[in-house]
Length: 162
Image (cartoon, rainbow, N blue to C red):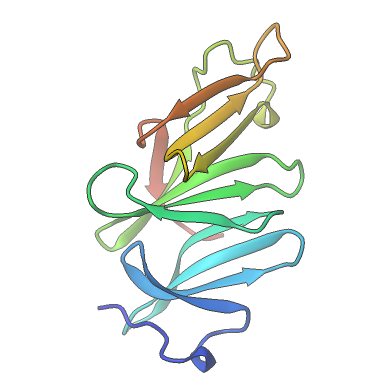
């Protein structure tokens, strides 16, 4: 059974309590001013442990939403890397007592001019309820666009913090 921190004094500095993210109660801790990193921590009777992370220049943009229609909410985290500004999206999913992290499989995009990681950008759009991928195309300056719902292009593995 989850236990939410009972008072703001129970929370670490720069933290905000949350209820029912990936089925856990706990807190999120945000660090940084211009480029921010947020880590979500579950708090149970036995322990406190990280369940998700996000980061970016515009502050983390995270959304609890049922992405696969199973009645349980995943956490879609739009992220932006500090070195090159590239945007991507991760999906965190709870399976039993284990958190899984999903990353987009961007192989086999139509006419993709694959110049490396900066040839794609991805995000979750909560208003449209879909994932949007823009990518460099061969022979044109016009980017390709792939919009999709569901988790078919995501590859999941158990989440581990660095």
